Image 1 (cartoon, rainbow, N blue to C red):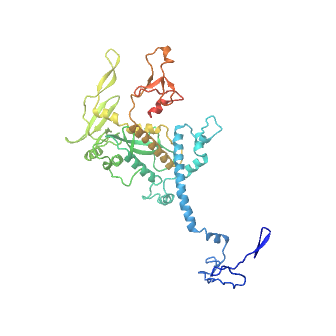
Image 2: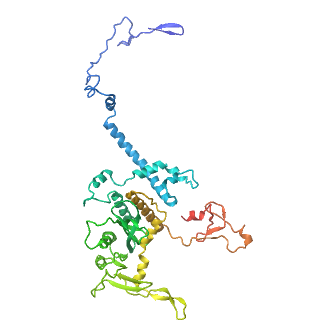
Length: 465
């Protein structure tokens, strides 16, 4: 073989180098290589099952992307989707809380742009269609188990709370585990407004919310919802001692609370049977009672004390822990002999005074729940309960936040200079704000540092959070 180098041809031998190190020439015999024998493990070409029958292009493609590949993709995609859904669910719940603060009736109006009251924030978090899609598909229980439970409708095995039971159990456990109530606790009803067509919808004439889902609630005096129970009508686990007895004994759990607690309740729950039972297991009780329900007859060693106190109307109390009277008085208007009205001290029973002080735990909780509630009208009753769980979470979290924060009663804003003349205050009565470094006429009384206190710049609040 020849090649051209700088205008001249040069010959090159293709023969290999000989064993003695000499390059072979064209005269030397060619060396025959040792070619391995071709023995394939399988017959080359198509392999089963493609060799049997007629195969479509999809059948051939599926030989590569079979069920194993798809399962791997699905499993890992779902894992990644769970991570993304967790972030998206946080945004979804956050928008619910945001909507509770904003007084806009329709959900779609939060994304409406051509309006005087345009709200730009929700669109930066999530699109309207995505929010509505999550709301439409939000589910608490397993849909397959729901279908099986629906087949049992009309039988004793049917569970009317099945669609919320998983989250209901978690919420009750969280409320009891994160915070332990103080000694005085109360039991009362709570209504969640709904017009959904469900068998356990209740009507309560005395409540601000007449129609809805009734909850029996155990609350601390500060308004913390310690435990609750959804009323679904007659229970197959009833003790035969009455609904009020079963409700209180199920909420007042000795294994959770231990003993020494004082339970306050109204006349729906008060009965000698209940109070004696709670006294035997180590709880004190106090509540109003209905005269036709609680008999006055008792033994000399009975733990029940019945008291009547005349205020604007007659108040009847039953207690196992209080004396009749321990010196408390209350001011009431009375007409004097000369026709004038004046406030005079009137003796008040100890049970009445303590009942007024500690019975309002559930009412306090209801007031806090109603402030900036996330509740929205919906025909899905389980969505109504889900929204109420959010309200309980926010309210309880607010109460715990106050428990964690130190008391700041002495941290009040005061002027920097209270004694300087009016002509000097404009120029000399200023301090440097320790946060924004601007001049300010205000300081903290306790911290004794300058802090701004203006509409557009509230450094005083930021400093004390």
